[in-house]
Every structure is written in structure tokens, then in C-alpha cells.
Image (cartoon, helix red, strand yellow):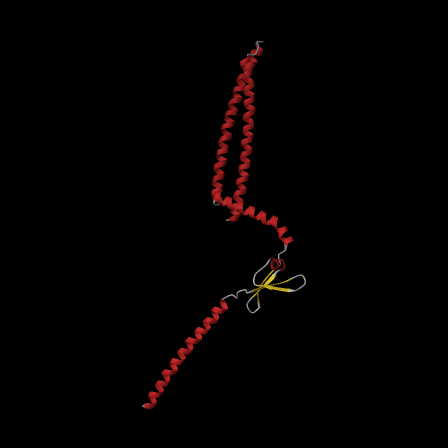
Length: 213
């Protein structure tokens, strides 16, 4: 009976030790994982000059950037390498960066103005429809002016047939009519060109917005 009691006590003590060991192992493993996930912090920065001499400091200087440098931890182990700054290459890339900046600004402007290609297509249709109405109105006025000219010319022919002098008012009407006809034709040509340019511009805008979508 006493032997069984001692065995039971030993079993309980062994179970407690096992739990304690498991807890300590888990804490140790967790600390290792946390340490492994924490990136090492740079303490020193080293670069080699044109003579191959190592220069170390606790901060990055213009010389580090010019020659390229290594970031070192507290144990002087390399944790990161940075290439030397190439002035000539940077100057060559400057126009490209400027062009990209302008393109990005233009893209942002397009998105702000139109949101997407569907909205731009709708605005294009409305703009073209408005120009069409203006062209149609100018063409109707041109047609009326041409009819008026026919009427004035008939009056002129009638006076010539009768060997009469052409009245000054008729001459003025013919002159003004001709000027107005030429003006209307110019307006129509201008509107037609405006129509084509508007269509081309919106096609470019819609194509760019589709590329960004």
C-alpha cells in the first residue's frame, strides 16, 4: 500500500516536471522566432574610397553615397549593400523621369476630369452632337443666303434686260450677300475641322483611359 502511494507521488512529480519543461521550451522557441523575425539594425556604415581604403562611420555621408556603402550590424557583419550613385546615369535618366512625371500628371488630370472611358465616351458624343447642330444651323443660313442671292441676281438681270441702271441698294445687297456667303462657308469649314479635332482628341483620351483601367 505504501509502495503504491510512493509510485503515485513520483508520477505526479514527473508530470509537473514535464509540464514545466514544456513551458520553458515553448518560451525559448518563441524568443528564438521573435529574434529571427526582427531584422538586424545597422550600426556602422562602411565604404571603400578610390584607394581601396575602408572608411567606417555611424552615419551615411555624401562619400558613402558617391562610392557605395555597406550597412553593418554591431558585430560588423554586412546586412545590406548599396550601390554607388552614378551622376552621369542619373543625368541621362532625368529626361525620362521628367517625361514619366508629366505623363502621370496628365493621367491624373484625365481621371479627375472623366473618371473612366465610359464617361469620356458619353462626353464625346454630347460634344460632337452639339457641333453637328451648329454646323446644321450654319448650313441652313448658308442655304438661305444662296436663295437670297438668286433673287438678287434675277433682279439684276431684269434691270440689265431693260437697259436700266442697277439700283445702289441692289448692288449693296449683292455685295453684302456675297460677303455673308463667304463668311458662312468659313464658319462651316471651321466647325467641321473643330468636329474632327474634337473626335481625335476624345479618341486619344478614351484610349488612354482604357489603358489605365
